[in-house]
Length: 326
Ligand code: AHG
Ligand code: MN
Ligand code: MN
Image (cartoon, rainbow, N blue to C red; front, side, top):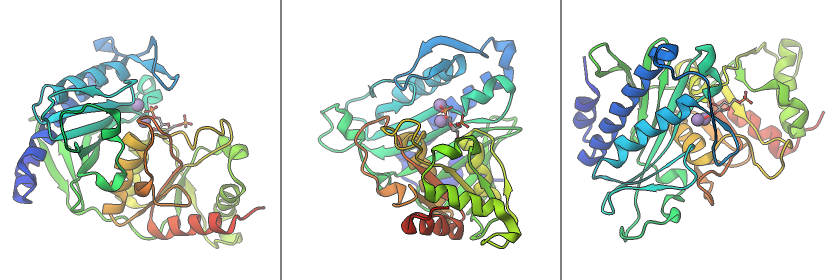
């Protein structure tokens, strides 16, 4: 039985990074407790507030954001944080080495129906000189991440973590410890399972429409095999399924609002999930380019996301290169 901290130390992870991951997990355990209590803690339902993206905040979006923000900013190593639920970065210790971006509660439309949600996080080095406290410090491409992961709050709470040396999973035990349960997670190269919000079909690019139409056509169609579909509406749950048994998950660009390249956010959804997927041998693309190579321009920038089993992701990219239409 291996605890998270001893696993990280055994793998020669930087001591400071171990400390930040550990404090982050203290916050995630508190979020897990709040979720477990649900209606008993009075945390279900919607607040009267909206975030910078115009979304109505759930009470638990705010509760979990406050828990994670406080724990991180109390740590001397954290120079600043950026969150889905904060308009601008929030600054901590001027000499802190690390910047952390996070989605405190992903899939929050699922809270009130008691379906899986999660916390997503990404850790980068603060650029020097450290005296400045400017948003630009956060705007580093996903390749610069030194650690990324999520905690899935499902039937069990599971941390999926990468520090750039593969992906490992840890399950939260009743003792409060995260214990290693999956080492060196590897995504199967091929799959017959896909995840997309089909109700947006009419808004997609023609290439995405024909790719999905061909999956649905099954054994009689050009892909010559039957596919199954899943949609949890929690990116954390979808990515966890992909890491566990393969698949392709996509939330592509659509023309509901052409100014927004997709629904998901690059800095605290696209990038950390893409690093996990690539570290597990999968692919992560905007449908054209690697997500990890996208140069961020805004903290809350959106990005088209397709990730999962490498051969399926390559096929999806080929449809887009060829601009396939029906
Ligand atoms: P969040 O709850 O952090 O705003 O993110 C929700 C995201 C993602 O988790 C999920 O894949 C997607 O939104 C679901 O979107 P639909 O409601 O369009 O299905
Ligand atoms: Mn989210
Ligand atoms: Mn969220």
